[in-house]
Length: 400
Image 1 (cartoon, rainbow, N blue to C red):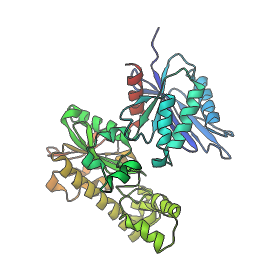
Image 2: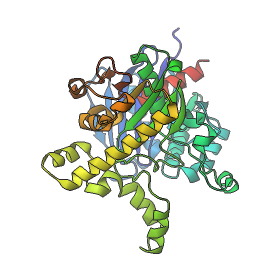
Image 3: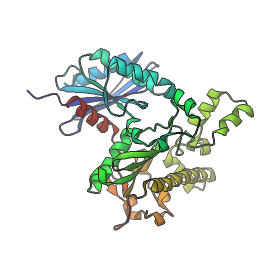
Image 4: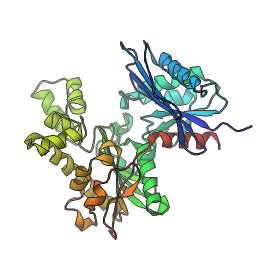
């Protein structure tokens, strides 16, 4: 009898569940789907099996249990239900694992309680992850369920990179330090970059630029993260779609004292009304580039600020790593916005960085080099695959 070889990956948000079912014998996708607007009027499920047509249905789903039951029904219709003997485990994306969880972890009551204790440092994400875990465990209490943490890859940062320069006792009492996020993406992309270069990850130093609506950079030395741009929360670092990235901390005091804004209003400003959307009203890089082509100065300034911050982190991480073998772009903007890649590399020739215009213009879903032949530092585009990374880590853990 064939041993179980499928992994269901769940990414639970506050009102959504993204899922993929993968066959770990070859990493192929058997089904992908999304449930959105959970708890709202007009909840919608979109399900696409690998060998069939996309199916969509709208029905009331009061909570995550109803949503996951609907997902299970769709999978069962394809002969791939949650009760299938071929299902080895369920892997859950969990955003914040603090310092305790440095690797994928089989979920127990104790593990779940610790994830709950981390809610104050991840109030927007961990509660939804917890709901998804509880629901899936209730549906299949006998099945191994694994938490894969966004922060885990970054726990290898040395203390001098992870610590903020504030009072140590206060920081420790309230778990204030730099954790980093997008870790599954940075892990996957750094390893795939090494493969693209024909080397083992332990031999390669890579700067990974995960550029989507959320954006982060990491410095990866020999397969281990030594620095990353996001910090205690995903707000720190690069300019993002709606997040400010780095700002003087005193901006918050100024807005409180001078503008009379509440803490919640400042939080919303920096997380939801800043970044590209705050600068020019758009957070879609395609629309920003279209506006630039039409002579829109606000769009041009937003783009220039975005690229300037990106260059600063590239330069900083070159200094942190000492030797850089590759700079790799990934995620929605990184994979698709050739003008961003070109602008980010412009003027960095002294660091051995450049892009070939023709290679950079190619659109492809495959990992590829876009630097000129013979470049001292490779510049690459590697599509990220966080679901596959979660599935691999989950399957590896339950099969040890």
